[in-house]
Length: 313
Image (tube, rainbow, N blue to C red; front, side):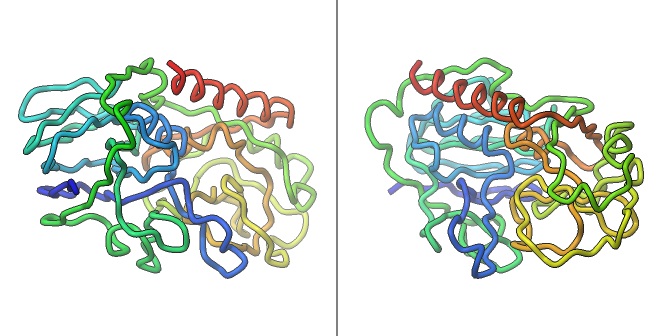
């Protein structure tokens, strides 16, 4: 069985898949990749099932040595990459030879990259998932971020398809840069805010604060005012929920979100735009636009068609 030897771990590199579903009633967060679209693209490019575990690389990337030859692909945040000192492009799959060193250097755009490896990252399943949930030290590689000296096990590629050189358009593999325009659906508790709250949400950009992370993006921008108490009886917290504490600055819940929350929720980011939010680094900005359910569904269908077309290519 192959493995990755970690020379440098990067700022925060964790094993993630599509999440730990089915246990929220027991208080276990879903977790999983912050940018599921990029995660799935990286897997498709190397011939894996889209749910296979990848490495989620955050802001500063690792240096890895491969114990055997592997096809790899990187999607999401764009880094300067090299294999054995030679620059490689991040628009498609490429081969790292046995003993080869893959190095992430300067970050160009985006906050999180996904390293897909043919055969997937083969850490043990915990409650049906290989995802890392850091607060509880659950899943992944010993329940923690990767550290120098780690040996991360790799699975066996399913068949010969994994060694085909697949290429994706740059728009599929590169995170957007600059201000990110994010679409939201109103609610589920928009009635607990003043009548102008949704207009104020759309009136200016919100800066992603430094204490943001995998649980949530803390935002600073136009204040949203409550018409009634900010607190509600705790209820479910879907990914993308914009809950608003008494101070009026929204908190955008992400992959490691708590399973229930007690602040009123003014809006929810549509599923198709959550990957864009995941690529916003601290100090960067998000802007919000309210859309219809039909628009949200059309955007998700278009995203799924993109993945299907790449898989069939």
